Image (cartoon, rainbow, N blue to C red; front, side, top):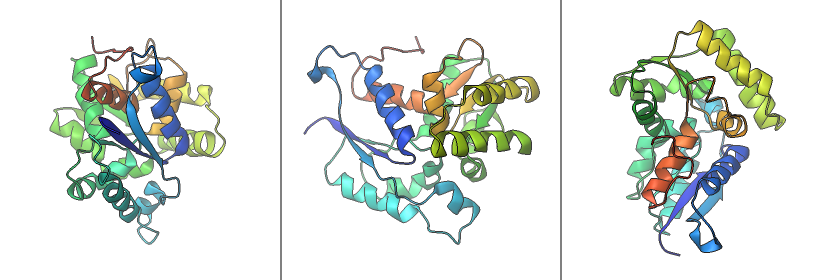
Length: 241
């Protein structure tokens, strides 16, 4: 197979399914041959990224991630996509392990702020505790001239519940809790834009269209957009026009 890319997924599986579904839905295709060539690797048994970041005595997922990168680099994809924000804590080491470019999901999300909300300065980040602790979004926001704001303890508990208990454990796309969290950000955090920096939140973003009510940048949706551009395809839902 030529002219393809590789999706390193399974972190979690529903989020990987959401990435693929969003990618296909936004591809301008009228026959089988119009869709993109790609390989999906659903490595569901990679150790939990957030659990390790919070407790380094647990199994480190970095070794498994780098092993996957090395194995699948042998097939020579155009680039890798990793639909897991927390895994980007290991981005530098993963990229060092291959000559194949790896798309940086948090960086792509932050770059999209200026395209969609050019006057915004104060940006909220909703993500796993692991992603928050690593500072991957804070670093990208500061590097691009934004102020990054993270939830307080009470709001982070709601985000954790939505990600882990609702979506991951029970496959429940809890609209009421999702809307409540976004409303809390708008009312209490004084931020112009909210980044959804967790691919479980991206599943909710794909399902419920709240763009008319809240200023949202979804990291996964922006990575889908970048993927389509890099593969020379039009994005049917291009919000950047």
